[in-house]
Image (tube, rainbow, N blue to C red; front, side, top):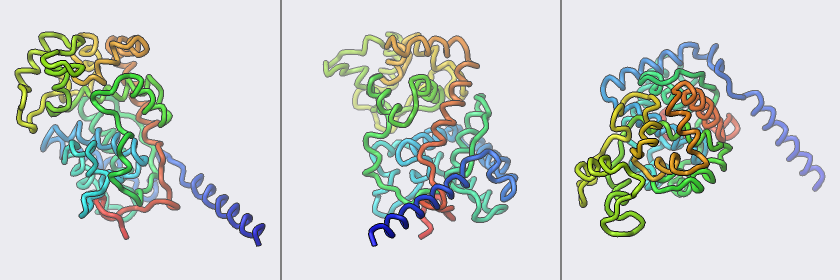
Length: 326
């Protein structure tokens, strides 16, 4: 009896492996079932950007936050009546609504032509690529064929996302757990070349560095620190935000790295990339050579897009990106 059970388990495992192989990611995944999906998504993304440029960083950040927790399965888009889904976790409360809306609107557009075919996870992956390309960055190939996840819990988020106060050791550990190396880490941090941050995420560097009242982080450019203090005085309204890149905040370029070299990194997790000898040379290279940054970013995004991909065995094609089908 035990032998028969073991054989059954082996057969089931083999079937699941065969299914997974058959559903491997591919840029051509929808060529027959929805050949215009990339055009449809890009048009939806462009329309959303025309409404608000916040779409650019919001969509890119949503993709990263989704993939780093339970894999690229659109679980970060689930809305829970009990406020206990991934998006409700404290680390995700700052995700801008425009990122979610970008995917929802793109899904609606896709459904009109290819009903029940394209996953929300794939739409998010395409939209993340498109906001980069449409804001001046590289347009790279996106692998497709992900299914949407069946689980979304706020409790799964803690410890899986980088924090503004992280130092290099913390970042390297977190990224390496996902098969991402130091170059990937630095390239993906370049997404901070677009977007904004609420003052509360970095004011400790301005007023309470290392727990010392009135102390400013000495790695900050002094003029930049004063500008930040003017924008973010103590006890500032929590809704106030500043640009991550003070020079080209809606253009995807390599100015972020030039800023780091000049002491203009907004977060501690930004500044350490230049201040730590282990990552400094790569930052300098990216600051000098935008093509080098773009190539590294493309490679890193490809790796992120492969994280814990779901198949028909453990996923679904959602009808509504914000709710499970069941």
